[in-house]
Amino acid sequence: MEDKKYFLDIVINKEKLSDGSFVFVAHCPSLGIASQGNDLDESIRMIKEAVELYLEECPESYEELDMTRDNLPTFSIIEVKKNGKTPNLVRKGYC
Image (cartoon, rainbow, N blue to C red; front, top):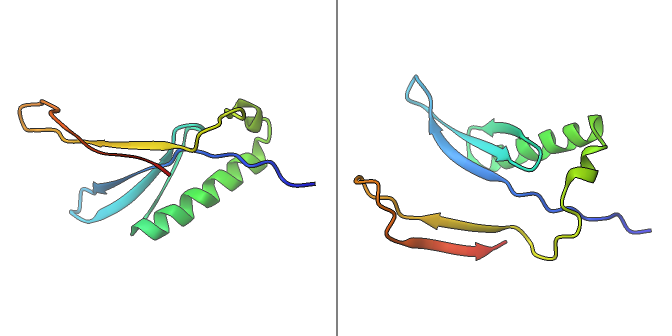
């Protein structure tokens, strides 16, 4: 029997720490968990591990995921100017 597949949205932001260094913070809004890494690849590895550990400890969370979703996660990037206006959608796509 084939394992059922679930698709989770992951958001990764580059954030500046108080010491001036940068870290990549990965958020999984569907499960309410986050992780981080020193670079993009490490943050992806760390959020994958965090998701696996979370679902291992809370298998009932599978029921909360949108299992009937026909589309893969989508993303959008918008332009924001200093005056707070958002004039353009810079990028939109499907993963």
